[in-house]
Image 1 (cartoon, rainbow, N blue to C red):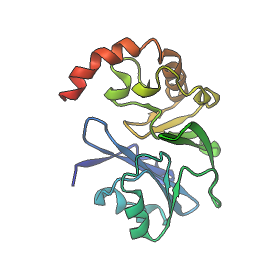
Image 2: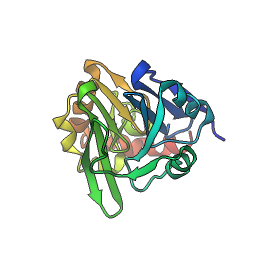
Image 3: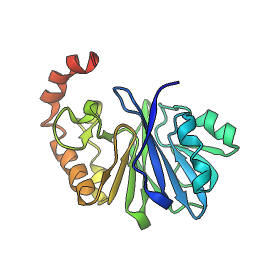
Length: 200
């Protein structure tokens, strides 16, 4: 079992947890009206035990097709449905938007309008692998030539990512939009950073 730490406690609306490793795999719990939705969860007892404090488990949402993490196992253990790259999920206030839709990479973002909360599992992140020292948020290295410009349509107050810590307040929207604008210019920095990232 890897080491995980709870982070970004949002009180009654949920929390996140991150695996302590280079890619900083981050999972999220979103609580709505006494029901808790898990986003791309890793199987970490310290985090999963906290769900009962927020409400009844409602479902597992896997927002990226090629990285199942522990979604299936967690859903089975909790006795809830496992939704992979959903277009809609009934009984939720969430809207799902396609970001990348290719045979080898299918990814959706989750938008919670009432909370102005955006979850992006892979296209952008806040970990060093994504930002390489340039800004708070960075685009995935494999998407920098064609960054997901659909994200410019959102002005989140809370940005949750699949790799790294959350960004809150005005900085969430500003940093997200800056990352898209800087994606191509940052390619040389990404290339230079690869050797050092491999040895972390």
